[in-house]
Image (cartoon, rainbow, N blue to C red; front, side, top):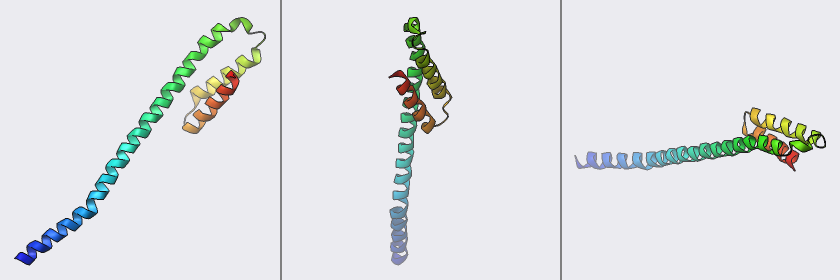
Length: 103
C-alpha cells in the first residue's frame, strides 16, 4: 500500500512538473497577445487622429492652394492610402508617405 501511495505521489509530482510550465507559458503568451493587441489599437488610434487632423491643416493653408497644388495632391493621396491600409506594413508605408508629403 505504501509503495502504491509513493508511486501515485511520484506520478502526480511528475505530471505537475510537466504541466505547470505549459500552463504558465500559455498564460504568458495570452498576456503578450493582449499587449500586442493593445499596442496595435493605440497605433490605429494615433493614425486615425493624425488622419483626422489633415482637414484642419488643409483648411488652414487653403489660401496657398495655387502655389502648393502638388503638396495637397501628395497629402490627399497619402491620407487615402493611410485610411485604406489593411495591415501594419501598409499602414507603416502610408504613414511614411504622409510624413514625407507633410515635410
